[in-house]
Length: 329
Image (cartoon, rainbow, N blue to C red; front, side, top):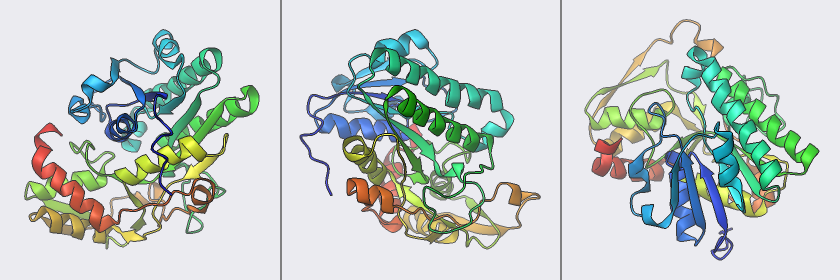
């Protein structure tokens, strides 16, 4: 079900992390839909904030360089907003292991700052929080529905789950209009591809485009839910308009793609590079969750959203983008 193109005309929207991968793609979509968009991004060098991501719309938005941990700034920016997409985050589960207090500060304290500001300044705003599939931990069933046990395997996953609890608490206790979206493995244009810490498809694509070797642990048959950016944006827009307040939703494709299938598509579209299988590292099972396919019946039922882009089609589009613009990423 398509989003009503008139639904966002004249609506005031704040997007935190709005110069990053998902945030900037959402910004482009909302500008095209006639929204009045404010972008807040700290432009922290390790993450995805990238001025180039907002090319073509900079004169159509308000762009503020700042941090969600800045109480006074956040209070100023949430005022009068109809929708707040709170996407700012420390985005690497790998870095959360070595920088747990930084992850806590951004992914918990930062979101409490936003929630407190909304409660005090703009309690009628609808807030959409970007969570992660990594809240689940070891997987017991597939597809994975929202009521699956949550026992994260990383500090990052623990703090994302804590964030979800904050949003539900502020909904239940103070009546805030909150929604959380559990996003699986996102990929597509505007994603940072400098390293392998959180963009597996992007990192593999960069290696392939540069004629390098992609390393695959084991047989590569682990199943993942790779979700293309256009489908993520559509899902967030659907949730903003039709999601049930206080709820958490899985996003996903149910395509059941293996890692090796993804790698082969990357190599095909890049037209260069090669792959190599190596043994799993020691203690890998502590971080390996098992096959993951998101159950998406809840979001489909409540909003009518369903993904449109296949993994093959998405990687083709992504490769075309980075063949043109890799120097900016």
